[in-house]
Length: 253
Image (spheres, one colour):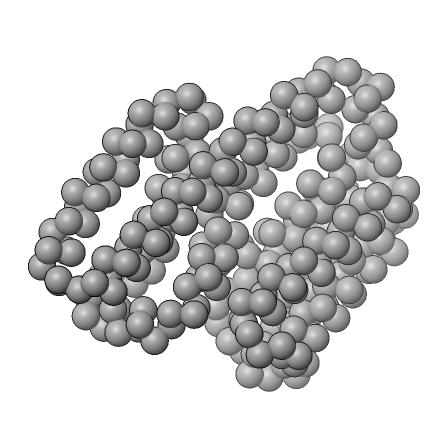
């Protein structure tokens, strides 16, 4: 589906191919930040790949990249003080533009020649499970920023270890759902609880306990939702792939 391809390119550009250093620099220098322009260029390159570098789509690529640049620029001006609301409004605006383009513009792709719709759906799920969910959880926890900083000072752990552990556990949960091994999810949750029990007993810190509990539930919950959504959508994409007239209607318009 065209919309999924555009969203995949967006998530790769916004969550995977953008570092924290870039975000900090953009927030400080706003429209003067070189990374704001590099970020828009990366989105344009990703769209070029999706459109197979065809000249007839250059206007579409320019439109999406330009609107992405403008939306990001407006976000940097912070018209709303609440960071979480601003983050979700920013993403909603980007997705809204892509949805409008996918449904209003007459576009076609040749990308199916080397990547199938099912593979795109799988790749989208992986991006959501890793980079996207990590940043969304970070935004959700931003309301407890001071408390988390205090917990981090007490807890001497490897840099970004929690981030990568969360990604791995979500990938495992997703794999177990796809393989229909729900009991393995319970085992994984129990194993994590056992490993964390020692830390909680030693720390005797209620805030740390609540932080770990909320983080675990959100991480596992998001992975389960993404896994179930993948299983629901997969038969639909399989039918589109098998039934070529329907496939042509959905993927070339």
